[in-house]
Image 1 (cartoon, rainbow, N blue to C red):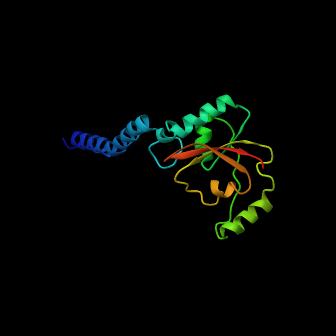
Image 2: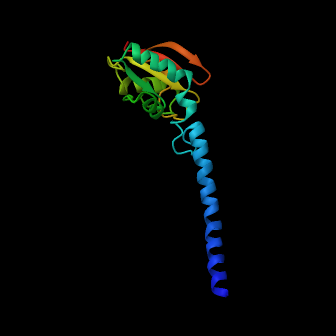
Length: 160
């Protein structure tokens, strides 16, 4: 009588042990299907980015100018959206003053973007403080604001 009881009790304990992981997996899958990646590991491949007006406007610009270079502070989000290479923005030294940063960038990136004109898609807020901001890039290249909303902006970038 104790052997069948132990067998059933062991099976019941095993099922209860599986409930939490299965419930967590079910919740993760439900959220991911509704909103895109639900974990914090791949935040740039979410519905918030894919359905943003900035991404849609950039898609229209790329369709009308397919040879243009793409620049962005969130290169991964742009790659997920367009499946095209994204060029790196100039780096900046945040410990320098604004004028010193501009002098440093002019020396390190003379003539940027060096004839590789295109579009800068800038997402807000920017968490990458080592990347030159649009107001700094305006000092070393020509930036023309094409679109802006509370989540980002698109600039046409040309060599001076």
